[in-house]
Picture 1 (cartoon, rainbow, N blue to C red):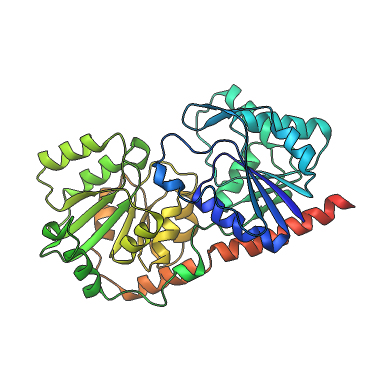
Picture 2 (tube, rainbow, N blue to C red; picture 1 turned 180 degrees about the vertical axis):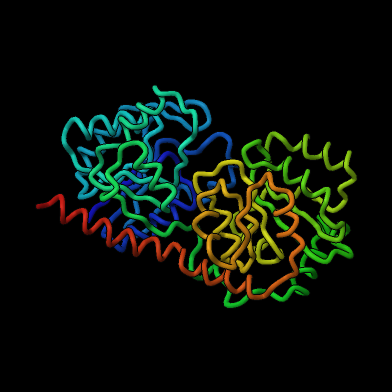
Length: 378
């Protein structure tokens, strides 16, 4: 089976998944609309040119618009020349995707519509809502990572009986340790880190918050909450972005010597940091998914997660892998921070992560895409 998969850019998590899926189904031809998004660290794309057995990347000749969009009318020609058994359109918001979706609908070509997550925004203008409905409805099948994202699809006209939920992950099974690290080993790791060894001295716990320094990731509220946290708890905010100077100003003005802005890390570096953290914090104002939740759990690190993240809603609800809170609720935040360290929570985090790996994601897609191919071949 040849699968043609359309996506905006060669995000490393998408490349890893499609390279694993390709040889299992026959071949995946991945068409990327642009070589990168302009607000991403260039090193994030370190493997974008790589090929693999059963995986062939193509780069659309397009005009990049802004940070994420792309204009091109070339996708229909690729569909015609590649003659795939199954077409997966992984998004609808770029001009290139809109043009392709219009072509597929007009020609009566069956396709799968995939999303990485979705949140319905209150007060959305009617015209914008109708535009989304026009491009989302009408697919032969839908791929969704969780129930909340599925609600997004049905809100814009998708037939609920045609939605298939898959386990969404950026983690391979081999990335998950057999058991959590001892607390003493975690503290020793940071005590030997030249960037923060001074800040880590005499601390009883290390908390890690990973994400861009932008308004949506809610770092300023996290810093506000952190002024009430005991000073023997260390917070590492790992990332980069436009609000860095604001963060530094707030940290200096409030004497937060137990907060360190830590530089951008590779995927492997992020997993290593999470493995040595006592807890991960993700207080986003809005995330259609939020891979850092799954990544944290995969290292045995419980998560203090936002109710505004679909990943947190999916992976933290009803288990001991973390705390699901309203980011504005300072009391709940402080209670989660100050709760004594618990090996049971760390083991629950690992167990949850083992149910959400790239391998599990691939297995689910093999079954879903095979069924769809048989259905449209009738």
